Image 1 (cartoon, one colour):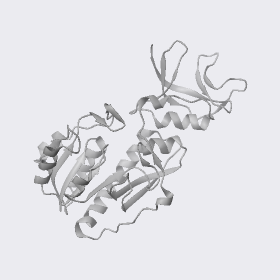
Image 2 (spheres, rainbow, N blue to C red):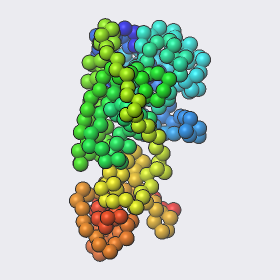
Image 3 (cartoon, rainbow, N blue to C red):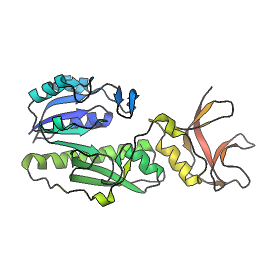
Image 4 (cartoon, helix red, strand yellow):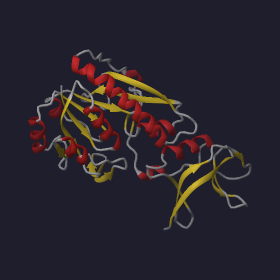
Length: 296
């Protein structure tokens, strides 16, 4: 089975490496993108903080690759991809919808970091942590005209532990995604893959997130503040609050321990010993363990 990979992230690169090791497929081409690119919800451009340059992998493996610079509808890019004669596209770590013009060339499958139909759309792992979910997963599905709405051919489940951050959860999901590739791609090649239609009554859709969405809303309890910080820590831009002088405090980590702070207003609070706390609406404080300050 002739496979064209579409990837532009660390996870995508690892998926390409895994595809190369699947006996039932031949990786005949790769499409990638620059680290900063325009997209529908931000035409001025976004920066992929999980970006990986796949060119070294392609060149060392003798695999042709193309860099998307003019959008998915670029006719010259489409012509180059057609020349690779793919039987299938496999998409991982990609931020663009795949137009019907591509899906007319070959069926397209991708990996989405949620248990579809839950958490369709943008930043599914971030949203899952923010919302206090105790489990999530990754889905291998066929693309259609919708957003993460095509039939599912494989899923893996993972627990979200109290100590998890977006980085540790991402690492768990990455391993499960590689397992899915090794299990599902051979079934696609043989025609034995079972396609399960998603239950639309169970669908939830979430938007992409931008750095400004990390502003901490203290009008919630400490549990939600804890989740908000760990969901957006490195490698993402971080949760933050603005000081009275206009400076920005990025909060990278808080203690999971809760401290009762009766009489203290919700917000950042500096204790007599100099310790900084984030205080929730429930008068519970979380001791801040790591910050950076950006002056106005």
